[in-house]
Image 1 (cartoon, rainbow, N blue to C red):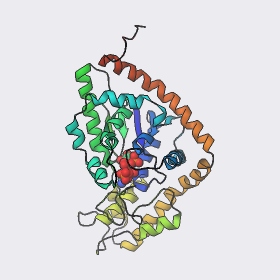
Image 2 (image 1 turned 90 degrees about the vertical axis):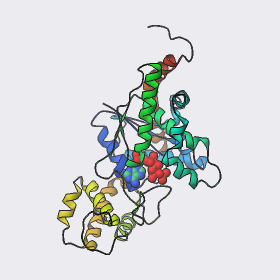
Image 3 (image 1 turned 135 degrees about the vertical axis):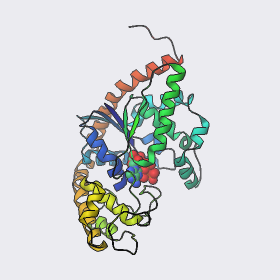
Image 4 (image 1 turned 90 degrees about the horizontal axis):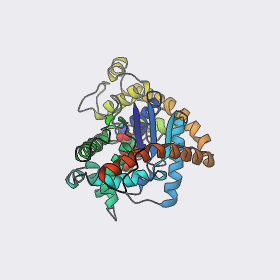
Length: 331
Ligand code: AQP
């Protein structure tokens, strides 16, 4: 089983990223051949500062290593170090429908949030994401619920490529967790917890100090009731139940049973304590790892060398199938 996923280099990963994606990355190392990258090229599709981008790659790398990625157990690298991703993006564009890209909800949301330029790169984001995964012929892609549409598009691209040029690419499956696939903003529980669109008090960051984590969770917006149950009109409490279930690795029904008759105050305190305990080890390891930038750079470079070995083989097959470049000599 080959597993691939990418994560954006934002200095501040939030609890949604952690539960929806990062914990799955760590588990993936023990289930198969896991390949993960920090997608710095994706980060250039919206307004950004070059110096901050470079630093953010190290921040994100230290967060993932702090969470438990082991460079001996997985391939972990920086996207822009492996040029095959960008070449494959262009080649895949020939089997990507403009109309499909135009339907992507993430493009609609993010383009409307841009104040100056809506870049063509933002529109092309899902093709680069398809290239990331297809370059490794991965079977499985661990992501949160918000990436489902991009995964569907990626599958269509791979299928169209194979139908047009012959069986070359693997059509991947999304792996979306049963619990915690869509963690919501604590202040606006009808919106997902998000790096760019979230509220500061409604977003728990992985590196927040324990008092801040605790305060944000205890101030989470809830309804005027008292029952700790999931319901359509109880978005805030439903979100906290989902968070506690994900953190404890149990089912939401278990949480409802345990807090039956307890009231919101005690429940929120329990969620706050559990999240603090859950995030503290990664915050502590992050501090040590982030202090050694040359070591982080070395890990990323070594990962890129291993990634290139895999991606270059796929690229050679894709070029050959498409009639791009000279005929490959037979071995
Ligand atoms: N709220 C969430 N709940 C569960 N999973 C989530 N993910 C994101 N938000 C939630 C998952 O985290 C992974 C990495 O995401 P990313 O850093 O590449 O950025 P993103 O998907 O665009 O989400 P962000 O971090 O919140 O950024 P913005 O604000 O730009 O949308 C992905 O697997 C994602 O599904």
